[in-house]
Image 1 (cartoon, rainbow, N blue to C red):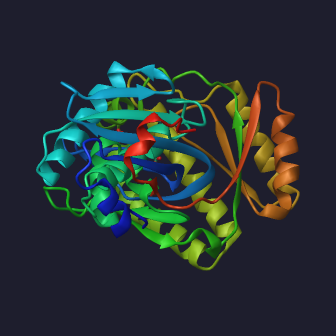
Image 2 (cartoon, rainbow, N blue to C red):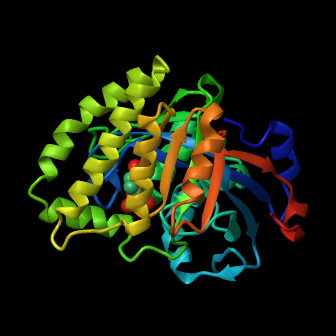
Length: 352
Ligand code: 2P0
């Protein structure tokens, strides 16, 4: 994983305002993460397997500034107190690792809607820890960055890697083995993703709250956890063999099981809207006609259709045609999080 080079580090040593700009790409799970074994450390109760997307990204610039009395956080051009609270733990921890107390100015932007089931917290925390690693000259390993990203948001652990990534449940109480690792680089299998966006608003019930409610109240939660090892093994094998049909079957099963589980919480969680359901039927109808496509849905109404590149135009046209779909995004598989630049002049430059 690219972090600051030695030259970059020399450039920032001795400057009063070390600054670094990092990019991380959103990912979404084919085998879903839903449930926590430890809330304080944010440890997942199940492993997960994801793909990282080229077209959806967060860029984050961190500037250490000795004149600041407190950390400042700006997201998409606005000061964001909620987001600032969410990132404060990550900042404190990484500052401690570097042995510095200097406050940071963080400017972040997403090129896609925030908090709408498009994995903005995944790319957000992965970009943050990567930028902090560069700005603080920590030189951490991808596994360590994955662990730090996970503490901010479980899915962020996977966005450290490009292509196909697997998040391990882990078993240690300190969470040091609850990290993601790379399964395959993005060029291993050129999948494409078509995303049907039907609602850009923030979801009513966030993932963390939804997971906790599900674990507390669903009568089916233990069955979900027990079944996960099988789905992970099936997906690992399907990806390794580039077996599209097998990956389609297990991915759709995992997405539907996650939503069925969430619906079985009390009160039940409904992330689908009517357009979501129509898109799922449309994808199934395409597959019945021999088009290599399958769906997945996260904690929001957007439908992600994964397909072979030869079929992407047809899939995009079919989903754009569904009533209620306002926008169709397309993406290939993307790279892991990396530092773009690391120098003091960045502080005054626009980041997007
Ligand atoms: C996933 N999701 O595997 C699952 C499927 C949404 C549905 O991980 O509480 O923002 O911060 O660890 O990572 C979204 O939840 O949750 C998520 P936290 P996160 O992608």
